Length: 63
Image 1 (cartoon, rainbow, N blue to C red):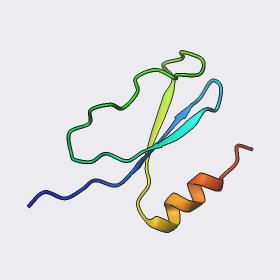
Image 2 (image 1 turned 135 degrees about the vertical axis):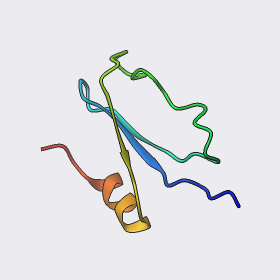
Image 3 (image 1 turned 30 degrees about the horizontal axis):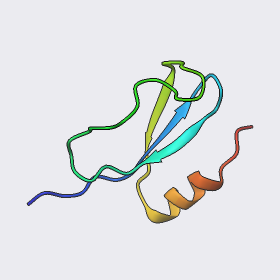
Image 4 (image 1 turned 45 degrees about the vertical axis):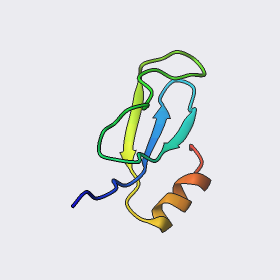
């Protein structure tokens, strides 16, 4: 039985752009390879494991 994967937070290490990518299936189509804001390929991917973690990641700030 297929299981929907957890959302992934994608963050640019250069300009600090970020987004939450919520895949509809285990096929990773549509996930960016480069930052749409600055064009850098230094993207960091982090799995968001729970609804609380997802909400915290939305409001997290870079220090």
